Image (cartoon, rainbow, N blue to C red; front, side):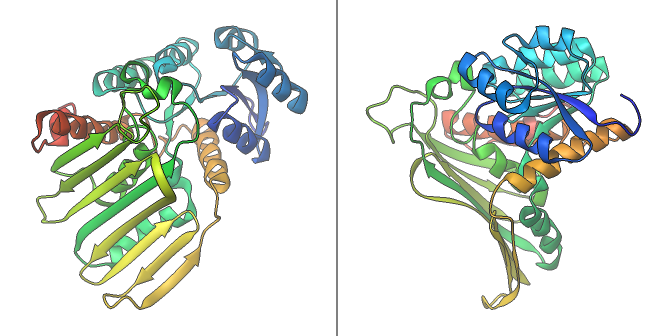
Length: 334
């Protein structure tokens, strides 16, 4: 890394969220695309033709051959271990798509690997970089005692689940995948709950073969008396991603289109529009990643900071299996 020169980034996985990260790198000042990697030859050819960046089918070859200041990875969950190991071996900062891992044991292993290697390891929990959700964090301090929180993330999946449909490769379904963002917002706004009580189902697509949850409802509570629930499903419409905080002095509702602050009667105190898409959040996220690389600062969404998210999800699945309340705090390292 040379001071005042653009940081060089390699992207592993160019489809789905990988395409979003690629666009964010290209749109962000001080960053340049050094190389791309994808096992899909057609997709790789398209990206290299569009960007002029060298392309690779093997990320280890890419790391070995191309000087880079950072890696951004968006791959199926069961492939994350190899990416983390490669970044640690090469001592390259890593921004990896959520979730942190398939389970808590693997999550702790990843964190330990990165910390032993001394690399910057950041998670792509981009809701924290979305202006509307960030504003929700500020407004939450004006709501008095928050006694109720509600998070809902719903849409209908339009294709085969492939690896997302199997516990071995995915680590979980709607709660663990798309719901990771909703869990992250809860933990950001209110902290890790003292208990969770969850149920999940995999019955929304009778014609498909899968064993992960397509729908999950997780109730939670705090010793302060606050309670709430998260609803996550990729089995039904209408599409919705909203988060509510209800306090003794007001209510706040946020989604990607903006945030509304209401008083206790429902009258609007303030209303602020958002960007309406994930584009600005992804750009803010990669810019934060670049800033942390340059300054050595700890990222807002470091791998270690994501352990409470994994603890919540682990506790929710345990609760559903044992049909009882479970404390997420029992899964965190002492």
